Image (cartoon, rainbow, N blue to C red; front, side):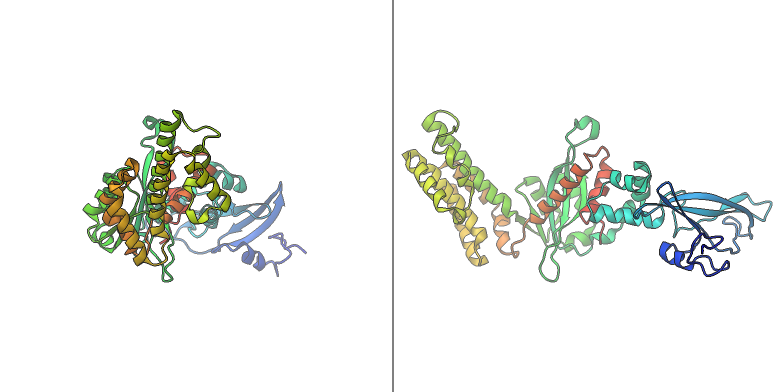
Length: 439
């Protein structure tokens, strides 16, 4: 039998409005008056218990002037849910008060002038953070507009982004550039952003990367300005700063993070070695055959093999490599360059850090004297970055890998949203999805 006022079979009596619906709906400060299903919607009518209320301006006990119906969007289940709040309207008892009339507010249910319940906002933020959701997808589930969802979510993200506690306990800091749009910069501003990532390790030694901020520009000035804004306590706490081989970021670290050790990212160092081998291969190809690589050319057929690690080559690939090198004496230059790149790579693959550092020091001390110009240029680059290059072996293999992982998450969410037009919205969304708003 349905309750005469609530329309629910779980009510005990007319004086007991649906105790089970209160439990299932789970909204603090209100009780359920009626539950209905129509047009594919679950409509739950709620109201607050009667209680004396004072005027928010003068404090005089207010006089009730009825109620108004306020429709709120709630967390969707099998069907969409609408909360109809019978909101009380009050009139100030003091005739001289400027407030006149006002309506009750229940922050635990909904924000002032909001149309999404508080728990719907929390649900939306959770979907954005953990489930790779988009605002458009949430709008579709809630049955509202894109702006309605974003206007409800944005203030919470702004509040979290302003919480300075999320910058505490950062001991390892990564930095990398990021392209956030591909439109004319005169329309949307600079395409490049500098991203700062927390690469600190937990008690088990595992790196849990999280995005700390995205600032416009790709320069040492942009990075240095952000570090200066964080304050002296933050800068003194940073002991390791990982970076790619970009002099601007290195200058910013040297100028603002005096106590930090700069570490050159291992992936980019190995990439420099692989790029040098490819440059040698293309140059020798032109010198011997007078044209770019074509199908059937010995060096063209091994270009992917030259990018692989020696320990990963199959017997068939080794035979192809040997045949291509022996096809012309000039190809020996390519083989020597490949061996140099393998030696550089082996420094990072050494199980013992002492052995790895010994190999790295030999690389720095010898590569710049190599008669192959591309390898000599690589050697000079490593000599300029000597301290940051060798710091990898004294910082327990600190690297910028976590920063690259965060960039992957950013790229995924930019594709899901089909791009962004507002940089601040982009920043807030990426801070949320990449863990930056979690202290």
